[in-house]
Picture 1 (cartoon, rainbow, N blue to C red):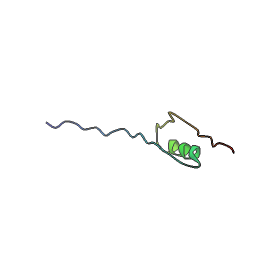
Picture 2 (picture 1 turned 90 degrees about the vertical axis):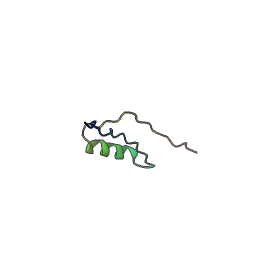
Picture 3 (picture 1 turned 30 degrees about the vertical axis):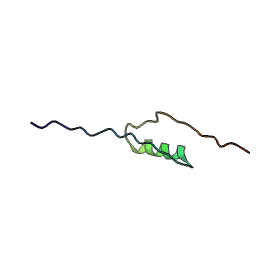
Picture 4 (picture 1 turned 60 degrees about the vertical axis):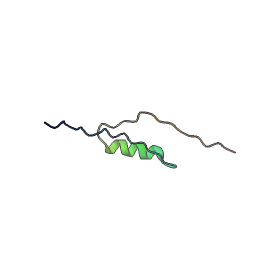
Amino acid sequence: MMAKVSAPKIAPCLRFDDSAQEAVRFYTSVFTNSKIIVEALKMAAEE
């Protein structure tokens, strides 16, 4: 008897230089049951 192999869960890690929040909102709207776990914003230092 063969063992049942289950598919791994998808855990994407997205990185964008611009429009990151827009991209994350898009991807979470496309994939059912998706959610944002951690949201970190990198603020550019003003000179």
